[in-house]
Image (tube, rainbow, N blue to C red; front, side, top):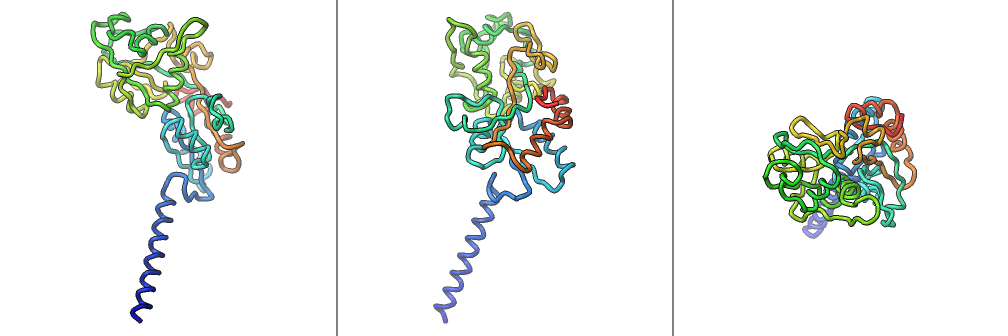
Length: 285
């Protein structure tokens, strides 16, 4: 009897352990998904507008659970590849030299500007691309070198794998045309792992410079004019602003079911209005 009781207790304990593991797995991103749900993960630049669109979409489809998560563009691409998320968000183009990325379907949902920002007290109001490259490569270490005060330059950048950083490096650190060489971002730059992190550090440092999505610019920072053009809805729409990049959703194959419905909503008039209000140019209507 004692032996039988011990077996029963072991069986009950094993059931509790397995139940606990299953509950833990279901709570992880992408695990134990509800059949009536959608996980969208990736770029922290795309995330804020995606959350707004998801909130609007839920009003039309209250029976669906839309989970929007950050993590960065590379994380979003990996989530789509592994199936952790049905849709990955990316603020950079897929890399042609990455075999896995080439297998994904990419849907352009909007166009965004990379805004170069400084503290409001910084007297510098404009830079050309050569000056911008010189600052972020470490060639210029004083604001005096680009028409500002004789004070040190503090660089604030996103982490490796960030879509915003990849796009910035592609458009700024690689000179257009022949004869120029690509410059690396200065190793002494302070790295932040989100758009909000860059903005928060910069707003408290009068000598800092960084780059974020145009939609994330607030009155707490000052946006610089680049190559004589200010970033706004019109200059992004007509491609006059040089630092313009696409916002993508990526998936394994063409989206189906609720994922397809959500993509169509994003590209429709409701999604376009939300993106316009956030300073983005919709790739849809």
